[in-house]
Image 1 (cartoon, rainbow, N blue to C red):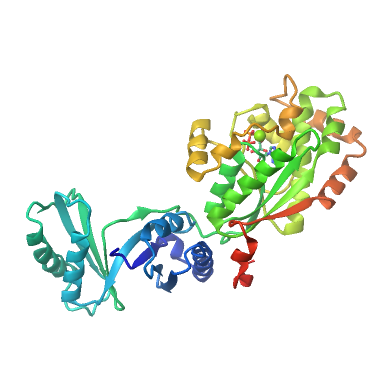
Image 2 (cartoon, rainbow, N blue to C red; image 1 turned 120 degrees about the vertical axis):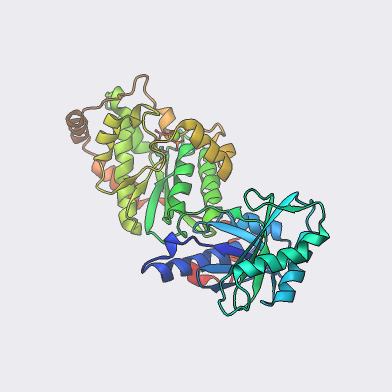
Length: 406
Ligand code: ATP
Ligand code: MG
């Protein structure tokens, strides 16, 4: 295998301003965590980029892992060599000779970041091309639409030679933008919403409402699996708060306002979520709602439901179509779990004709008559079960030497 390192690029925009240090520290931590399954590798950091030394490890799986980390715009496997003309030419030749398939057209792209290097970028383009081209008579130069762009990045410590630029997840490093609480159901939407929120740099904890014995243990396991999948992207553990919602749900279902059942349940959920968010210092609630998808997600319903909390409600999927959401769910690997058939607490109590246009005054009046509600909400928050979900099978593996991370 020719590659000895992988370069990780952060993207310029996110590197500006006073958050830079914090951003970089979060990035380093995420990379460190993600590399745990690759014990031979090591990483180092330079201005605006990070490198992973492969130390003999195949680059493929390492690239696959690192490209899922938030805050990284692209990754490339590179061959490093002395920042010196002959070394660069020879390494470029070796890289070209290692290709499975010789491209028909080619372009040189040298970037001289280290200004003391003897030749400028333009001169280097020629000097390297002159060396490489004669070895591949069937390959010609095409500067507009080359099949392969051979890139050389000349830095003071080394020159890096590569051609592949693999797009990565983008966004901000995990946890660089504060903390949110994700309302995680077992459905398709909320895990995708969680992934999008994490990509924007939100650290997440998750909350799930469970109506045992109406909903099964499997429904809960499914949510644990979804949370576990999300931790793959943050490469760190997530806390999942399981709320027993049975009493509240049966009370609401018993108040003879069938068309308002969902509105009332959603408002109770938001109140509980707000209580948990306050406890864990989360600054907002994240949901998988998408405008118009179901009765509780019309603008009028969201207006009435949303007033149950003062926290910002973050709804990453709000303007997305279901097929776009499904595509993302497949891409992040939550879809297969989400479509497992276990009952959700809300589907169980779903009325025949839920209101798409609830009246806030009526809703508040009905709630006013539910004398025990405040106390039930307080108890649900207090008696919640907290599950720690880890990205790997064994929590010890993650925690080894990583105490600062949690
Ligand atoms: P999902 O596919 O995420 O379940 P959905 O389209 O089925 O979403 P709803 O069931 O109306 O939509 O729920 C809207 C949002 O409310 C969900 O995306 C989720 O954020 C939250 N939610 C619903 N049920 C639960 C639950 N049992 N536990 C936690 N959050 C829930
Ligand atoms: Mg649902």
